[in-house]
Amino acid sequence: MELAVQDNLVPGETPAEKLANVAACGIEAIEPWFSFIEAAGDEFAAALRDSPVRMRSVCDDPRRNLGIRDDTHTERFGAALHALDRYADLGAETVISIGVFGPADESHPWDAEADTYVEVLQRLGEHVASAGITMVIECLNRYETHFINTLAEGATIARRVDLPNVKIMADFFHMNLEESDMVASMREVGDLLAHVHLADSNRFVPGRGHTDFAPCLRYLKEFDYAGVLAMECCLGPSWQLLGHHGADFVEELSSAAAYIRSLLAD
Image (cartoon, rainbow, N blue to C red; front, side, top):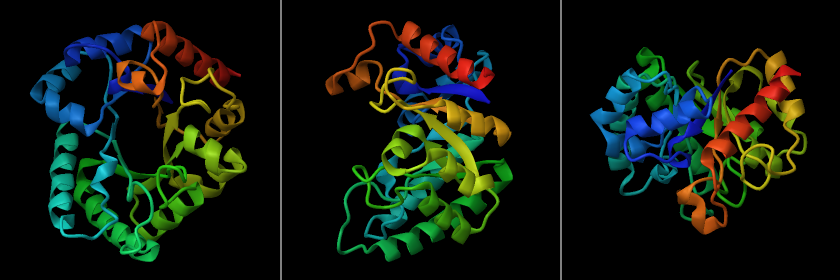
């Protein structure tokens, strides 16, 4: 298992500076958002080539809402294909997908959204199969979406897609709100689990809230999980308005990384 951190948690004026700061925290990988990749362009690709930090996963834009078939669906689907080609050029292994973001809309019933999202994931999965990319469905808590809240719901969609490179991910923050037994939920989805996000109960870095990470990490070791554990937390300037801005990001991220590694070593 490798630890990763999302780009917006790490300061740096250039991609090279961001990657150097990730390495300074003792973290192996960066998980960029599509907006960072688009803004950084070829500079990011060049910085990756010169850095020990890898980019194994990408957090795609949830506002694409590809489970909703509306007047802009075709245009958004085309943008998603273009983004995936860019991720493939950068060597991504895993791309996160969110089918619908936000509250329910009576004009787009859940069943219709599910049918549309299955079709979309089939087409996206086939598009990136030759590049070795796995699409993973993120299951968000009920306050962020009405669509796919639990790992079981995500697994149902993945099984309908029925492609070897379309799976699901587990996010500790969302699981803490939606799953009655996080270990049992992960065990139930089995081999469909292909990516993990780390955040504590309060969205701070692991170790700053009340989530019990130990049983879940123990299960991932038993499961021989070889993917990424990516931190998606309230840390850094982009989270300042939410009331948390780590005074020393190196200390915060380094401490969180050490905490996770200590649990994995038990």
